[in-house]
Length: 364
Length: 128
Image 1 (spheres, rainbow over the protein chains, first blue to last red):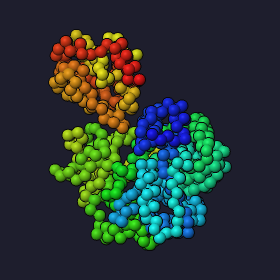
Image 2: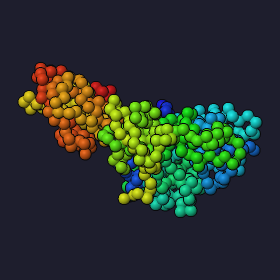
Image 3: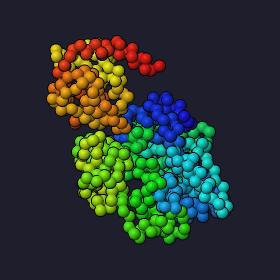
Image 4: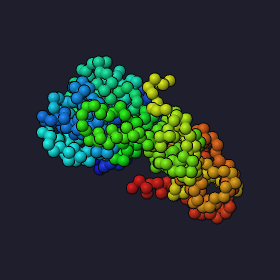
């Protein structure tokens, strides 16, 4: 199994480690519920170095990125990042990702750990005719995420970057704990926070100074277990569960991600056709009405008909409810619609609820 | 750590005998493995259980685990407190986190179970 450069810190903190797509990662340190609530109420620090980093550079870098993704990368500059995707000709997902403009003709794609190699190959397979170089720098980068209402207060004394100036999805460069880093106000939790990237050989300094500074604020190290419950409450997609090569960007409720007017891109035609004809199914958020917890792969029923499977499903630590995501035929996707989920042979009622389940303003 | 007067199984359940009644729960080792318990599916009173039959399920945030009956018997009571406070299983696994109470069918089946010291040795073996 691969280990990130921060592995010694996880061992020291007594993390419970698991295998995650070939990586030995912390699933929890002090407990998922406690870690989840720390991020909602104070702050949490995540090692996300397992994510992939692919750099596209060269004269046609922007054109190539525009071709590969549905969002409009021409709107990026060194101060802005954007959420986007690698799409197939069918308008479905190869992966979801963040795009950063590093320099003129240099773009950084931050991709899911599970898809690093697949995405790199996909990009190479499509670069014919584009004057570009593609480099998989995943092994060079260390990435940490600092998330929570106290994140900025904790990070500011540790960096020469003026964090107040960074808007959502904004990007800045500077030092964190004396280490050169790229910092963006992005994250996967629904809270305010920062993702910090470095290619330095001593990245553990960043982890250590944040953990130390964060102590008095109640900062905790956070594992993959709470990472999942946090992102689910914020209705952030998990590739492989909620989105994959069989779900289109429109079915996944991301019409806003598709900039049809920017020019041609992989999947444009298919998505345009689907937009005109109307989608047949759509992803929705649900709340279980009966006892139990709906989990991924559990069958979903409307009446007697099995219509889909639960995509993401878990206990929500903030709401103390069983929540999840699934695709339903569009005619059943109205808020308040009821349907049923088969939980180990028992039919339990569920209803469609607005998402995100959790919005930052709800902090008690 | 592990009460001397309890019996234990390889699936990390414990059994406390009081006359012909037995109280069943999961051990401290099990609750640590599971992580935060968020839901417990309990059997109804009157349910007939065989040795090693699934009597219900304990759910942590990440996983669903079957609970196996350490002995044959009839369910007298399920710990209803676990409905509102499933965390009792984590906080007090050998006490307030008890799961069911059964009327034992055959006391002879106790021979299949481990004593506290045997269970502790068993746990040491697992760590190797």
